[in-house]
Image (tube, rainbow, N blue to C red):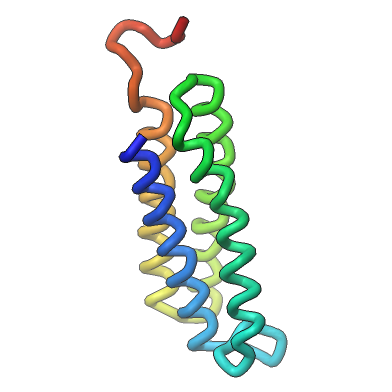
Length: 126
């Protein structure tokens, strides 16, 4: 449980870091910036709500819950890998680095979520 919980927390922190990087380098008038702190707080709240299901699911150790959590975390992998492409379109090396780190950690989190607690030679729990 601690491994899965720590991975979700680290991914949450990386998502907040990406939000702050985006706010530090706004690309236009309709993007998030530090000039409107209420919008930043709203985005932090949305990110917290999006990370709430994997956080709650990390407390359970049933294989079905682990699979649901892994599927949900696959969307997080997709989000971080999309940020890599966005970082390439607007040449921002910090966004690319943090998004790449988030993608790698998200993939590791999926494996840790599924493989934690499995006994050798026994894939299905009773």
